[in-house]
Image (cartoon, rainbow, N blue to C red; front, top):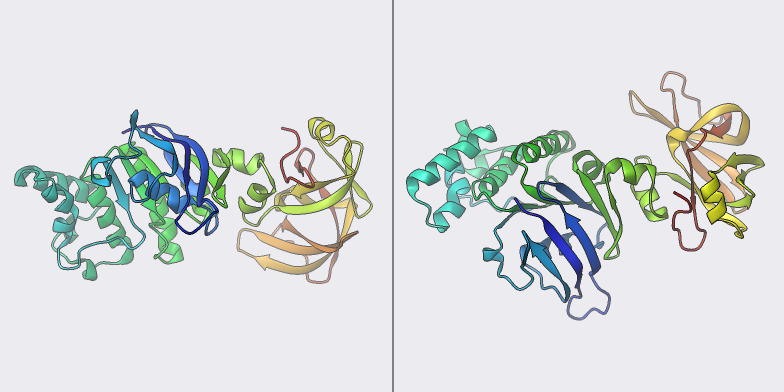
Length: 359
């Protein structure tokens, strides 16, 4: 196990003037599962490949277990990478695939067999050791790829969208298994995904990237409850946070004639601004006797949950607001509702920079 540090690390690909990763300053604690999440082109895979030694570091440094590995060859970094396509050898059986890195390291056969058997038992693959990858399901192939990483006993696991080729049900199962396995092994892990639900359910902490820049890093609860800017607010959470540009009046914002109180520190930070961007989570809006008049456009039934997409009239034009509703008492399309927000659940952002105002 080892601590990992990106120290103002940057990468600019040849032929481009825009950094794929810009000044990343991030520490992954010993034994932590850190998830890098963001849309395509955000720099998350570039960061992982820089850590693995597969991409150059144009500025800054990468430190692994207290050692600067910026210029160290990939084979000498003692990290194990698990790829999106598993990268298994189709002509080798499961036992040979798992033990391959040990064979390359000239580990004695008896020791190799013992470590393969231990990894197979841990991953419930013992009965499949004699099969070829083509005879396995997607989830089983993913376990084989993990077994190959585990037997190396590396300082860190690096996982690049390892579940993206699986169907939705298997993804849910496997992300739970990976998180449980990592917690048991306590091997420092950096996990890359574009799926914010995957990030929130797996990570001890989550680092959100956009356009090669770190937006915010924190626990899933911190990102959800206190997003640092409008990008994180809109990216983290499903359905996404409702974001509206609204007039500011003292310690209140005005939405379609209704006023919503904001926290004193947010009001103080917004002093002098004529308007702010207000964020309202779907679950913080609820039908009430007084508030914003809204028309239901669509209802999404999800079994235990239901969400209504409502239209409100703002100075900038009609705007959609998504609210969480009781699935047993869900409104119907075209119904008129009056919405209010729960106290203390209004997020406020600067109208130009998008940065959070207040704590």
